[in-house]
Image (cartoon, rainbow, N blue to C red; front, side, top):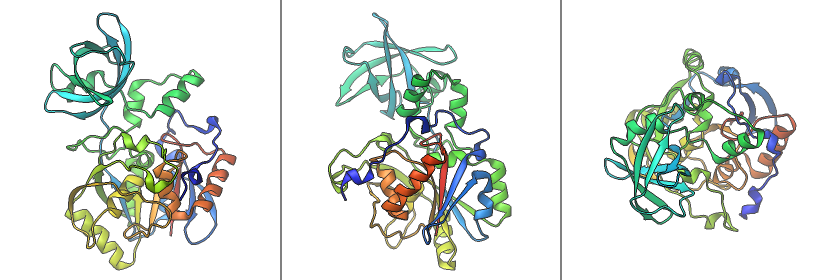
Length: 351
């Protein structure tokens, strides 16, 4: 398919810059793959749309506070960027804005939102990123001076609207309530899960809805727009993922009973749909690009936010409901004041 088929126009006012409070007060548009009906609800209504025997599958990855701000020592030039991946025990690669004059050996003073300051050192350039050496364990330093890695469109919209949000709020809200400190932290949140609360999960459990977890390390590729003319020419980013035997058994048992597997977020879909045939537990890298025409093997439904145009995430949702219908759904969402993107509202797609 042509990439321009994933285009749509969005009023900038529709971009959410702060999350709904409480989490499950976000709006939820309910659609079915089997008919054209649209129902407007709230995430707190989710138990009403589930039936006993359903299985929700969510990505339990935890977001690390990898965004940073600071200055280059010597000329106090402002520097900001994103730590991307660890290199050994005391270094990370980083994408740095304002790094044109950065040289190996330069020191950068990182400024935490609470006033903490830590000096790190630029070791060497690697392609578009830099290797940054830390004076101590990077994980602990990031907790002190790192910031929630909000997507650029949220930060840009906040600047345009002259909005200011406390870092502590973003640290809390740009993280699911069920996130676990696993071996490979993510640099972006699996945003559909941001709407769920412990109380809502308990209600779902009481309703007979089961819960299983997978893990996918969300990387920067999730923000990368499709720039090729044809979607299948897009160099799909690789993401590490894992599913344990208990979760796999739950998915297969649900399918065998004829009950529904509902993925919480597109990252959960990628894990399940990337499994081999026959499915097996374990960890692996996936480059699966799900687009219209994809035949879903294990996923029946999806809870997901409203996504950016020309994105692989939009293509995935289009594969589930059909691209023409998806565009009409998005038009309804704009008309009715739904909030878009990571901090925005969501849609529940059912069979």
